[in-house]
Length: 270
Image (cartoon, rainbow, N blue to C red; front, side, top):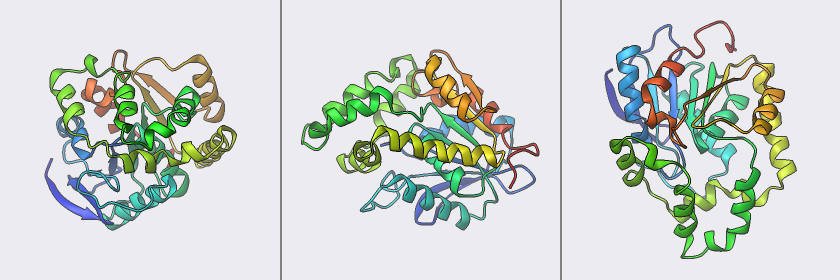
């Protein structure tokens, strides 16, 4: 898979492969990480889907992409679209991990998309939203890393292969401005309004017939599964047991196989 380091729409990116009849893929990493997290998946894609056109981006403020004054998620989704447009990609399959899963969901509700793969990002806040709001004073203090490290402790990093553990622990920049910026919607929005916005986005995705795949590292709770299937009756839910919060690193071959086939049929084309 040939590749080149470039910038599109002001975002740093690695561009792989060439355009053909296969829908291009756009890979969006999680909060505090960067496009290096997709290395294992890219290697698997090169083996099973050679020369597929793939764009792996650094989110605003991450990796080699410039900082921004605001990281409102809708604005970030639009910034991703600027990069996709400048790269010349037509209706890509959007793949996102963690907060990237939320961003590609928002993206698909706003911009032409062939399919969505959400890697371990629940779209209901649940206890996480309560925790962030309770912890906001700490998050805004010099001790903000206490909160970040406590979250990492519950992400199943020790379940990953050694090389993947090293990637998670070293290829990250947990800056306070990123945590506050990308989590701002959670901090300032009531649960009811937050859920209503996600439902509107999923309704839009459903009405357009865009295939939506949710890939989890553990079995979703019955409540969350029921909610997601009620909003998106055609959703595909795949579980990679024992993958923790990083299914793309625990089993990159499995994820590569999943995303390689998304959006290749007639559904989801608009």
